[in-house]
Amino acid sequence: MTLMTEVAGPHFPISATLVYVVGFIAAVTIGSIAWYNSKRPPGWEGKERPDVVPKVDKDENPGL
Image (cartoon, rainbow, N blue to C red):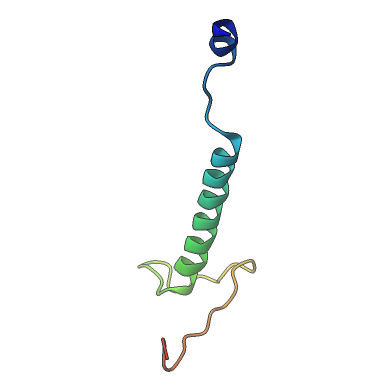
């Protein structure tokens, strides 16, 4: 029994790793969309929005 635990050893569950990876990719994607739809930083005012980034219209009454 101890030989099995020494060989296999405790490991981080693959499902938890998958959750972290998918969460990171989602955060980067959502952050990129938000950044491209926000006010442009200095030097980026005249740049075009990439085709893959959707246009998000601002509401007249946000939160209502």
